[in-house]
Length: 269
Image (cartoon, rainbow, N blue to C red; front, side, top):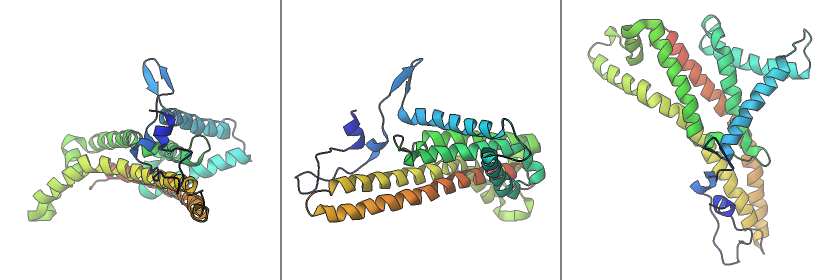
């Protein structure tokens, strides 16, 4: 698949020139391998995910490698980010006592997801890695395995299952229905929705930005210039909106992860 096919874009295609609007689609998210390492084909999203990991690790290493009593700018930003996740998410959901040990994981998860989202507005990158379902699914799977492990570790085999299915004798006659619903909700639907929520928002946002960007170029012909300006304004508006959504989705993803961990550690589901 060529680059033009990937973008569904012909630079000579404009309104009133006899060609239809090159609407973006699933092909917008497909990339040819840019290299092969040890038999593994490396694509642009994979490379961005690796670079995202390096950016997160590099930033926190630079911020805290040589901490000072009076922090410099880098350390101050790092402490603010770390404290935001620790106090604003982990402590609020899990609690200070139980949540402290999970803070490093949640901080890493938040900033990794955020950086992978932010790639969509970075020149040359211009692609949110989390708009490919494999990446949110992999992260959701890690949280899912952690939740299952903590549940059985905390409550034992029988108690763990009771926690998962919401077993409570006081429910009386509706207990069987609750058990079935909770079983499917927690074991099957939960990891699915955790991944899809992030994926769907990033997928839709990127698709809208690409659509208005292509529309801006497509309309730059004759009287279409008037509409091209409006389309370009929409590109700016959607980009600004995506900046907000990218941070919110990273926050929500970690918020849900903390909620699952809190449920695993609690006495009652």
